[in-house]
Image (cartoon, rainbow, N blue to C red; front, side, top):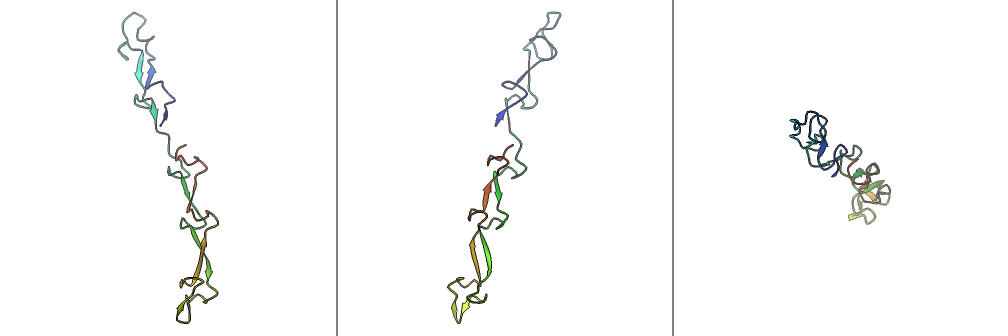
Length: 125
């Protein structure tokens, strides 16, 4: 939440009168003599919810583009087993029988996402 930029404590000055009084000495019918009106922007709360950051859609995080949020990248076919995942009948120990080698993503160090720089991770602008 943030303070409403249009008011103080949810109230704005009535533009129809001078602190609740009209020129003829009667009470202002717009503000009922209070000289204040409820702020339309914050509905009288004095607070507004800042708009969500467009860069991260309000999450405060950006998915790593290098690994698409997986945290690992494939370096390609395992050269030890030629991509079969096996050395004879035994699973290849270099690729754990997968046929390819996955390494921690160097773009995000395996974290899968980054703090959004546009909003410093708050999700708000």
